[in-house]
Amino acid sequence: MIFQEQLPLQRIFMAHQDYSSLTINSPNPVKRWSHRTRFKVALGIIDPQPNDSILDYGTGDAFTLKLIKEAQPSAKCIGYDPFLDSAAHEVKATYPDIELLTEFAPLKGQSFAKVLCFETLEHFDGRFLETRLDELTGLVAPQGRLVISVPIEIGPASLFKNAVRVQMGKVHPGTTLAKVVQSTLYQRNLGRSAADTGGYINSHVGFDYRSLLPLLEKRNFRLMQTSFSPLAGFATDAVNSQIFLRFLRNT
Image (tube, rainbow, N blue to C red; front, side, top):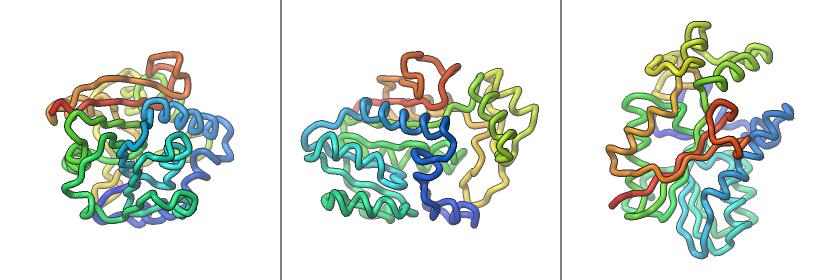
């Protein structure tokens, strides 16, 4: 949950909620299981090593950094998010050497062996997405890793997720039957909801993780690994809700 341009009021409200109550501590058992599994998959992909330099871009409640420090206490961790969740400060109280930033400026000129961006890029499109990717890729050291996680909103996952949203009365802005059908059929370039202002898109409808691949390729990043969650044993977006993309910076 992150970006630098002006946030719409709805986004500001969401950013100050207890993020964990929407994910790992969600009252919905399926959602809770899905997000807890996602973090387990994430840690395996990150594979923190002694003295690793790791940036979590869009750290939210810093739960990812907590898992990294538990697994590898010597890892040097920075979390960046303009609207940190209150739980992030609890993580820092446990691990004081974690650095939490709400401004991007201190990161300029730095580079990290591993840069993480989880559940963030799906909220941007067009030039705003390009800006996020420029920021991310500029922070990865030569031969460093960039690990991205985004929700799957195409194929059967789209149909299932939108059906659940309708049932729960939490339909995303811009949802239409035509778009749900098109995304279920893997059609591309459906367009994103313009209901929100300032570049942030509150809706997942129309997001296609496949659009990220050429954008990273043109920034000289090579896709090294694709993983899925929560059913990691099934390497397909047809039965999973999240995808992890691990890139190597070529130079």
